[in-house]
Length: 245
Image (cartoon, rainbow, N blue to C red; front, side, top):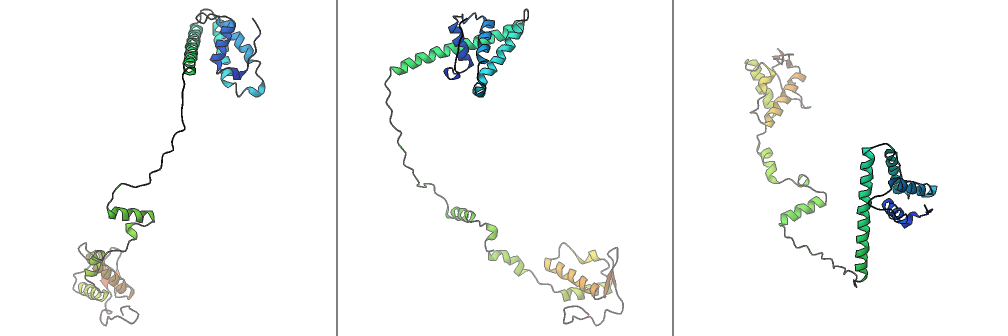
């Protein structure tokens, strides 16, 4: 066969190169002498310069595929070889039909006058036409500025439960606790607290227990039992430092 030379830039891919070899050697596209075509292709691939291997990656991939096909073709009655040969032949026929159609469309386009102009640049419309409630706009603005409902000044209604709640003094709870212990109505720490008590009453009771224990008037057992320290109940009063003596 005639020695061939080629440049990668002249072909759009390995199928394009294979069609060129088939046409150059006047092979029948529907009955390709596949072994001869493989030898021609691999010989050309071996002439690729080392600095062009990256650009020729798809051509080299096809060469590896053809070498594998050739190894199966050399086997007697190989079904795998027949399948690979039919697959490659079908791809070449489809590619050749696409090239013929592309040339035909190119000729039709060459005879057609096409005039185009630069696209017009649309004028930006910055008008905001949606309507929102003023409260929604205020919330959006507060969110944008890093604010939130939690940072706003609390309303008067939020303070109503605190202001209207009855105030319970520690002194009154101390007297109540001592009377309960003396009369035997209070025997355990759990009896002093109830879910029905207000927050002020619970806090005052807790502080009263601490004051009595710190002053040595009462002791708390391991089982949460309460006991009075006899002889130190009378004369109980609140000193200048706020402690009961």
